[in-house]
Amino acid sequence: MSFILPFLSVVIGAILVAAGLANSQIRLRLLLAFSGAFLLSTTVSALLPEVFIHGNENISYWILAGIVIQIVLENFSKGAEHGHIHVHNNSKLPWALLFGLSLHAFIEGFPIHHHSELMWAIVVHKLPIAMLLTAALWRTNVSKFTKVATVIAFAAMTPFGSYLNVSVSALNPYMLEITALVIGVMLHISTTILFESAENHKFNSSKITVILIGLALGAMLS
Image (cartoon, rainbow, N blue to C red; front, side, top):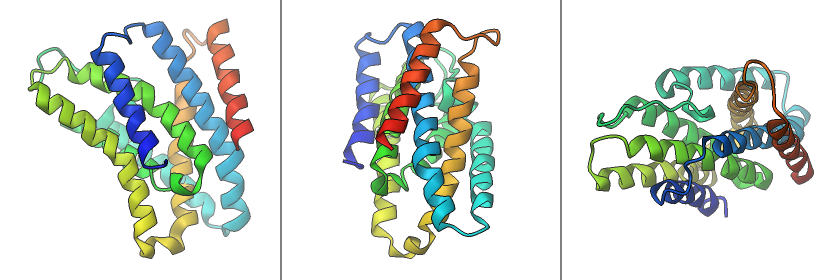
């Protein structure tokens, strides 16, 4: 499941955009807000307690390192992980954007084989990102084959990270540190999504509702 569901989430998001069924910006923003709340709740209630219970005094630095890594990645992706994707019509393939998003997707895949609650949070998070990425790719002037291949390659990055975590035994002694690193990445993304959900520093009732639902579901699944 940890290999299939994150892949399917991207594919479904791409199909919705390609079929013209995901044109509502309001619904997309609500989905982003929900995914950010779900991701934050899961990270805080499920992952943080584990790394602090079983980790040593240095585990906090790995969380900070994850935050720094995500900040660096956003120099490439320009904030696409939390809903900001800007590609001009008839442009070339956005390599920097794809690099940042793909490396982020690869990193977040590492701990999900051991944390089913995180897997569901990532599945929900990847759906709006896949929709935004597909919409951006469809505005480029590359061939349709290249567009589809790019979406599939992106969809495979999270399962690939999960696969390496399971198959490479040399990583086993560092599972807590890797999880802490991913926590930092997730904390940065989820909190940024929630902060940016506020228009003019105000939340409307719809966003407050979906955020509360996301926080509650994340806590219940943890």
